[in-house]
Length: 409
Image 1 (spheres, one colour):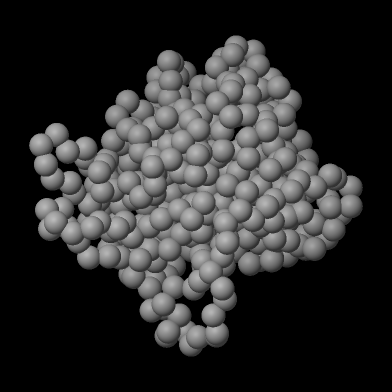
Image 2: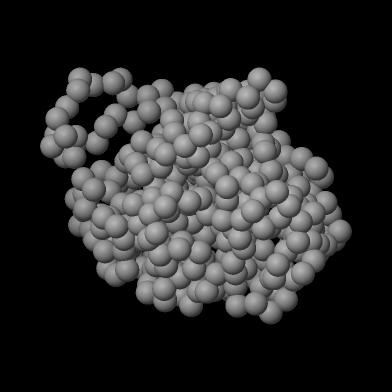
């Protein structure tokens, strides 16, 4: 779901991982076989380009490319695909969209609702064709932390389970190309655990994941100290070669943003991190990336948090270091809104920001185009390319302010 929520009354959730350039390896054997088989057997969803792209320019040298951002491709809307609060990953030339499924009848915050699980679809291009969603694990399998089924954990109270995020241990930690699924289960937090996060090892980028029948994977309740509670989350890769990615999380109550470094297994945290990024609170749907051309980390987030909203403002923060120096543009004036300059789009193309995924070196903002209902099966996913273009200006200089980010919806 979108925003998320605190203790029993509200349950925070969704946002991804980005490790674009390192992802071209997938299950070395899957690749075209998975797509060819799935496409032949399953109905395809459609995606449409909805914004004109900048004309392609002549080839440039690596040095020039580092100084001059590549032309932005057009935005894409994926419709007819029951995957939500998603994240994208590119593996062996194929795009993988991960998300929460609603089609079996899940209704958020309704007791004893069926829980449809977390799934993945595959396509040769962002516009598709996308294969029908494939479950990453069986909702009827055992939740190792409670000893009951995931259906009970995610459906009995209607709190759901959300934010599937797949990361790949490639170029960092054990560097074994293993795939690891993260997701959150609000009920774990409300049953007394310090946080709602879960991790499962996966046989491949399309699963199966976890220790269930035929999966052969593992489950771990992550050890975390900076990211705790029950909130939306995503991942951001480090700009330092060989360094592990970091978990970007929101906390319940104040919904502040925290960042925690992952350990070498990618299934827990090290305790290194930063609390209350740039002093932000009541935000959600975080995601971010390392911009090598600017030598800058960039985070985006829904501001303020808002569950299943059909138009949430989106803000940003930047830092030269992953674990320090985060700032947002200030504002001046009597009763000036704190978010006056840090917002770069007033309604996120009519949807709610989910997270950022980096594909082929380009960050993409993922937006859920919610319908505002308890069941969001028909909600579309909107993808908008991002580029950070710094502009001069500070609060009080009397000049026109142009945010360095924009959404070409």
